[in-house]
Length: 294
Image (cartoon, rainbow, N blue to C red; front, side):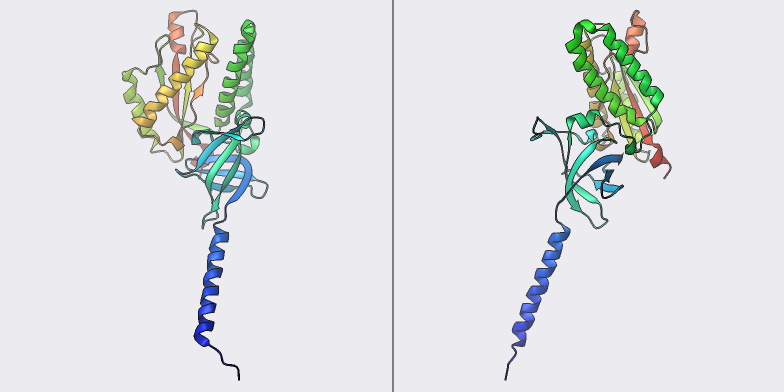
């Protein structure tokens, strides 16, 4: 007669069930990698279009590593701010799915040249063609006037093109508020009189659903092109620091500061008054029209 050891059988069955449960958990939490285009960005979440999913929701956290791959073999990685994750950018995302079938990103990477070319129509932002033509015409004129400095022009054109690629995606945004900060000749320090205006703008922004803040720095054409490009960058960074440190604007709500150099002159650079108008940083509070319509 065969005798069954019931306690032992129950024990083995329990262990087997626990093993299956752990295996299931491991499968669910398994890391995945996807590639696609950023279609939309709203603070800590973004929608990515992949070959498998047209609207994959990716969640960004404080632990998400954002990097730009560099070098001929794309093996070097440069840490980047989340502000670089803009609509139209081709990205690789690694992470795990949560219970809402959203991909919680452990890391997001992209190529440097992809950032400059983030102009995809599939990004969900309808580019204003007339504005782009005007900006391109201004750049071509700028290059023609500075042919004797070809090497410097090439570097500055690349920087400005990157900014245009980034800000050219903003045509489908409402502008809720705007502050212009002016600077002295060759100066990058923000005059304290502008601090209350910037802080008030930051507070107003926080009341707007899905807001983003855009910062563009400019310079007059007095002096060398290289110096003016750097001045526009430093001025934009100085204003951004006030918004982040004093206005407590989350980094995920800031677009990467744009260094526009001499690309857009609003005043006559032949006069002192016109030069003063061109030494500026323009700060805008934006809301995507698609978000506003929700």
